[in-house]
Figure 1 (cartoon, rainbow, N blue to C red):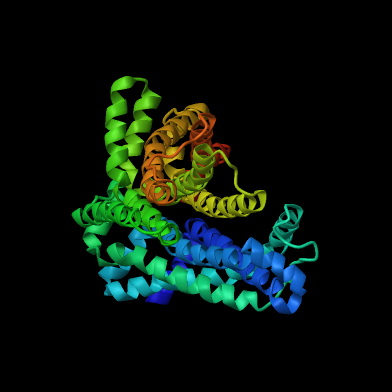
Figure 2: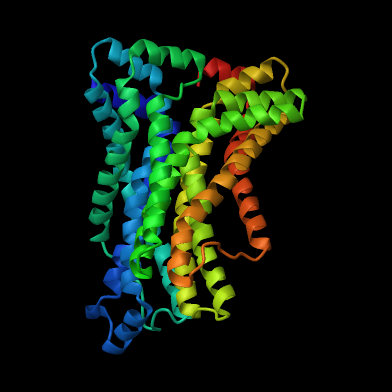
Length: 448
């Protein structure tokens, strides 16, 4: 029964499974890159003089940190994207539960889906890691972070390592995402499919609240530690806060939509706000990577800008470049996961969009409606990212600089909000623009 559900998902819901697959590809790419880079910079492959440059730039530590962060990010991001795929399988899951499937069998089927995806995703990630890491090494050489003789040595050893990490983390993330759905009563699941709106349970609210409060308490504890230990643990503050935000995002979306309803009466405006309220639980899946991307960038940039502002001395170019390049990697990781989530949500609305077009909605009105929805998501996500960044950054600043508030040049927050809006609009509006090129009759007739 489990294998039947897997085959059905891979055949009928392949577009929903594309999001976790792409997240796996990116995870494999980062893991493969770090493994191959560590191998290329080992003492056996560099002279003593060149190794001294590597040790001075702390690239050994950097690759270890990047590898660890990639592993920790894969679990929640695959879980988030897989959760969206699971929501599209609610009817199938309910039906197999009716005929006797146990919650354990459903969870194993969902875990097996991610395991199947991990095989090609890991191979593709390794292939992408070779040219991308080669380019990164070249840039690091240019900025004197690495010695002139440093070159990437592609290694097949990285492939099984990447596969084992991607497989393990993906299965864990998918299993966590499947817990609630696998335990849902079949009748309730079918009712949610018909209603198109899933309820927000008390357990979800309680866990989200605990994670937000726990992250804040951990931040306070870290503010009393020495800088090195505090900085190493702040990532867990960010992860807890982002996960809590994702769990509570449906409430924030619904209340924001209800508030914004007072400021406009245009039919497109009101329809968009209705859609946000009805799909708030689905949209919340994109909040973990979306807020994570914004908060991660804000923390790294804020640490540098605040240090320079307080001390009046800029850090070394090599250190700044290493830090910023690593930040770019993981922000890209989160942005891709966020785009995957938003595109999956949009693609799974194709019948809904086609139906609205059949009753008179023009292509322009559909795109305008989705852009309003994207604006609401941005309005909610931006302050949440600021909240997470502030909670994460405060202990780092307090332990190193003796202050709690960061300093940013005025233009940077505007750039950050604009980037967040661009990601959201791209993920939500671009698929609708593409889908509305097809006749709505053809979409309805195809039943897909």
